[in-house]
Image (cartoon, rainbow, N blue to C red; front, side, top):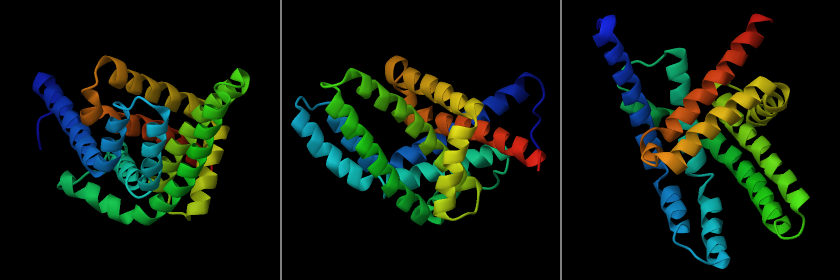
Length: 228
């Protein structure tokens, strides 16, 4: 067993976590390659009509690509938080991907519909009613946390898809502390990644968001479990 005391021990622990986050994020980015290419294409589009043409295929492939890949990343985050990781970590991501593919795909279809309706409402009211547009933006934050909690519930509980949605929704509206923790931690990571240090996106962003979100979720789970 490696000596983890002193400076070298601290260096070993830091390098180990960097390796975990980087490898997990690179695997997630690789499995999300089609989604990533479509998102990059959006940066070079000048007309709203062309954006719509790209959003349609993006919405079509997201349930089959983004949601299974992100579920596998959250399953890795669960291992990190619970300190379960053993063996060759480069193979376990693929195992999580396969094990959760069907449930995450069907869940992804539902979430794509929800996000699509919300995006359409924001776009429609953006030039017609500022109050309603802002209201829908607030709902977007709620839907973001709901989506994150769905990933947390899906990888932690062995329950049916419908029960996963119900549990994720109850945790989203029933725990203000969890809600704020996910919003603030994810917001900070995404802001730094998008506006300050974009290199984080392929290396750490997804892994950090998943790890911080599941850490908060797991603390709530342990707190509830201790009272029952």
